[in-house]
Length: 430
Image (cartoon, rainbow, N blue to C red; front, side):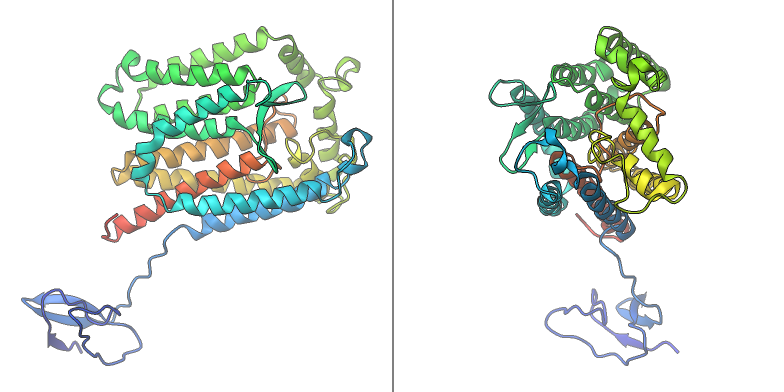
């Protein structure tokens, strides 16, 4: 039976909050009573329990945590034999890459926590500056004595304990800039030249700098992120089709004009030939051997043979091949399933934000989903022999401090979008 008591207007009963220095005692019923206005200044208690709002998507956090921890174990497994390789040089220990990966994870987690504290309104204001900084760093990496060259590619800036890769920041910078651009250009999104050309020019500048390193894989990811945000931001289908055709043509010309890129395509088509097996098809053929050895359930953790100096870059680009050998078909399917769930969940958070008229937040979240989904798709396709070899890591799992850092910051921003969505849905204010 409901009990009616007179309360001052605005008093919220027993919710653990004080109003003007006093609290009204209520009988204990096993459930905290929520006040419901009946008429005038009178309130009545109901038997409903209060809703406990979680600040972020905990399922998303646990999936990311699982990928990070499994990646940590596999990086150690894939790199433990590298010191025994005569080409590695002195100074390497079995835990060399493990220690650096742990340090990278620690730094990335701290910066991700800081990124989570920043409202999306602030990210929207600084988006152009993040993009400009990424361009400046892409230029610096090409300067002698600043950029570090490895295997003929100049992609890193040495920072002591780790090497920073500006192309990872460029992915993040283009993502923020594209979302900010679409919000600003909402009124001209139906006009091709006004809506697309400025964004196309920005992506072209980034692409030219990346191709100078060279890093065509990062350019592909950035182009897909920009295209995806343009499409999700409301660019009409015909305009999107024209952009897609233009990009395909550009990438086709880039491949056709580069002899070593053409060789990669030919090696992908026939990696077992005498011409390619010890050349451009070497990584692909040994990746397929590793996955074939794993069969259904794998040879067991640490039992990989291909990581013993046969498969190059086993702890970075070809980590999935080691997973396939040690955990078999089941392990690969689990990883694919986790990334599919992760991408779907991030896209859902973005759609939720857009439905609440928070366009920038929604486009940023969906851009992160495109980034994680497309890059993981490319990496898995390369490891499984479905796509030509590209120098792209597996997000959240492969060794690489810059990639882990920007991946976790991007995920933290998605969690911030989800947090702000939940606050607004429950009547709060940002």
